[in-house]
Length: 364
Image: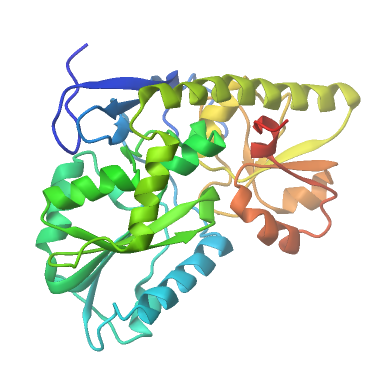
């Protein structure tokens, strides 16, 4: 195998710390009637020994994911984040804003426009990147571009799913094609420094079990206490120690087995089960758990662009929400935990919601 160069620092020393083997492209959902065997590709995480960035080892897939419906939890978190940034005095009156958005959807531009910021096509006083940077194959070039487009005195706002959360919660299926980097605050501050930026402050959110919004500037006074606490948390979590990641590999096997056993037990008992949330994070889980339409007849999703398709690597169809009433399942297996409050409110007729993450919980 060719030597891998880090996507950020270009170092070549590192370790494969999580290997899911060959997986279908998790962002390509075939048509329901297309029952050809899906092609599979390597899916592995590599940890750079030089800068500590966890990243995809290779990704030969081409992103094609149909855009999903933005969860209410994500919209609420965006509003909360903008309010906190404004309270910190980081949104200049009449300033300009540039957004690097996520291909999965969602935007902060309307929220920022309501606070007087004007979109810019060039340099900007505020650059927002909400889960966008991780989709760049060349992390060094992507960070350099953001730094170049940041106006003097401006602020770069980066939101990311914390690597310490992934490790502590056993979120092995955060690894997926198209997501090239998995950030610790330690690695991200090194990337910022490489691009001539300094971390200023940060905010924590419960989204995805633990996300961080980091603010950086070109001439800041340096990290505040919040950033320092995140760096200390990284050190305790062992985000640069390949040995720390070994448990993720164990979590993958245990979680997949638990999901298969749970579905098989309900099938044997004659209990009707459906899934909800045709998310890319569910693809590797269903494939590792060897779940097919026999065990899970359908996955419900509110996005019209996904309805009529099927889950990659399986024969499980993606169906519209009206199937919930038509099939009246005894329980629904939720593949996106952050949707729980939203779906409980939207579908009060569902008897029981089961968070798929609890089936693989380390506490069970």
